[in-house]
Image 1 (cartoon, rainbow, N blue to C red):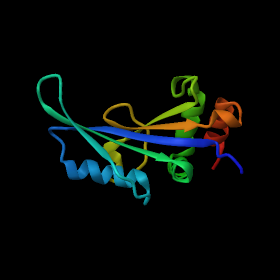
Image 2 (image 1 turned 180 degrees about the vertical axis):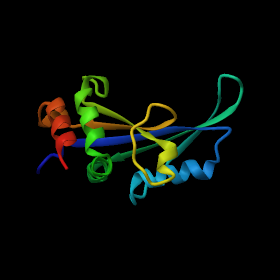
Image 3 (image 1 turned 90 degrees about the vertical axis):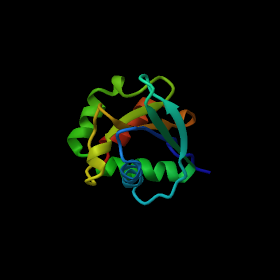
Length: 143
């Protein structure tokens, strides 16, 4: 049985009290590109006592690889090259690639990397099939 290079994908974001929850859901659904997935919600209190909701999902097996490749195809070549150039800032030694996608742009169905108010995507590469950094590089270089 052939092992896939991508083991799992975790998505997470924060819905602030000032945000319309339906718009956050729409951004998440846009990011999932038609993959149906259940989300968990944690209702928390922010630093100043304001209500926030942490929304998370995890994809495994074939859906993880499928999602990662769809996401890679939606990011521009220049954005993938930025991730590749700064791979040391967007990955760790455990085989995780971290991508932050602009939540507000997703409402316009535009896929952009962003640091502020993102949907966080953690792509876990399978360490059993070899060098994860090399797998990440191949993933980011592919069209």
